[in-house]
Image (tube, rainbow, N blue to C red; front, side, top):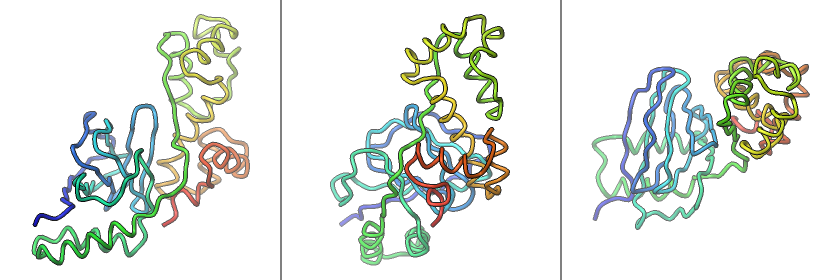
Length: 241
């Protein structure tokens, strides 16, 4: 009898991305070392080794690395997997689960030993209740000019009125474009862009005060409030194992 899980490993250089793809089975995307990024549509997750992402079968996604990363892909057959989460789900990788995932990577495990370890690993998959960060990009070149400027420098404090000259559109037109094409106001969109920029910095261990300055917040407390309001947990709770 075959086991429910298969494992794969890949070294990802910093800044690299795998193409968009999907899997026939479920995947637990985990960085054994480094920092992993996963996009599903416009949603975005950043995963240090204390976090993994459960990606259901058939979900189109892409995976990349913000630092030199060892991607450990744990694949679960649909018909033998007890986990039934219908959407991508952030998972806590605590020390016991990490040891089990390392154990399951051993080439000399017997089938019986592997099945016993798999059963425990499935039991240890603990979801972290967060709202994924969502940064849709506008298609209109005028709004796209503004969006690219914010992404290039999240600390840029210019208003839409300030951006209007460079974008070649009025403040009112830009506001309408963001609302129509990104389904949110420019202010709310910029919060999401700033929070997305914060994730690799936080995952890399940068102090909260430095992260908040880097992405345009006046204080760490203001950043924490914005993060918690948008994501549902504090930055520390998002990443702590």
